[in-house]
Image (cartoon, rainbow, N blue to C red; front, side, top):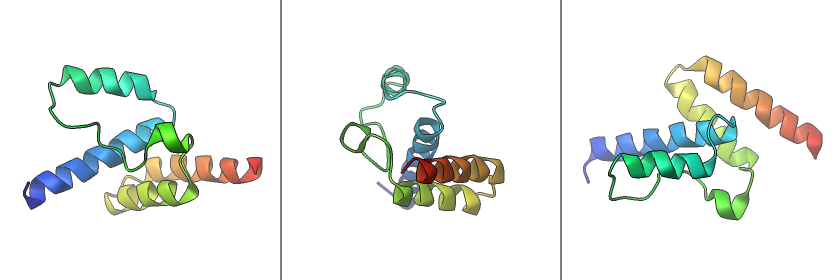
Amino acid sequence: MDFLEDMELYSSAMDNAYNLITGKLEVEDMFIEFEDEDEDDILPLPFNPFILGDPSDAVIDIVIEHFSNMEEYEKCAELVDIKNNNAKKH
């Protein structure tokens, strides 16, 4: 794997994490969508949703940082809101 492939995989993992954290997609839907793409690899995610359940604040921070670097501030704001709501629950 070269650098560009690594970056593409990382970006895909961040997109998948965003979709899971925000509830835009469920894990099962992501697997179905991923299988339809005829990929030989695993579904890229920065966390294991079957072990962790809800992602930790640290994982959300990583996803926020990624989208901040990409200047996708609407996604950042949405993730910050979710993180703040999670903090209020605990």
